[in-house]
Amino acid sequence: MPRLTTEGTYTDSPPPGRSASHDGDEDDDLLDRGRAKAHRFLHGFIDFAFQGNVLEIAFGLIIASMFTALVTSLVTDILLPPISVLLPLNKNLEEKFAVLKGGSNYKGEGGYNTLKQAQADGAVVMAYGFFLSRLINFIGVGMSLYGMAATYQFFSKDPIIKRTVRCRYCRKSISEKAARCINCTSWQDGREDRLF
Image (cartoon, rainbow, N blue to C red; front, side):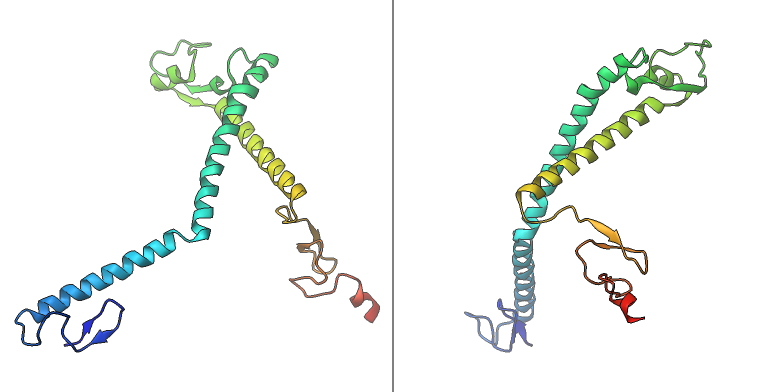
């Protein structure tokens, strides 16, 4: 019976150090094939995991998560408290809510002081302050990422922000440097107008 070698090829010869008349040849061949497959799988995984692109993506994701946490902290801890003081909110923006249906201990107007108190009582609340806080956070993260991309593009020749214009014939977005539209293949310098 052919056996798989460590190089990934099949051979009819017995493994080194064993004779062809060995009683457990089938068991040994099965073990050798299993070891060879496990060895090939492990080396394939190591090759994949330590490629340059995978490591760059991993580092990029780690940096992006740290940057997002930093901007989130900037928005929630630095920007939102002054907004809460400047606008007549009387409390943090995240604590603004509207009671849609009161809980068992609800006492009419001004019945709950905090969002957690209302939720603990079983009230149905619309936490619009929390939503506005997340919206401001999203806008802050987006503007910060755009600022970083613009700064990177200023100092390097590698474009991150790709400017687009509309094709004059099919009205789809194309690169502003394109000579032809990738959608309708028309020339952008007006050749089609001169033909007719």
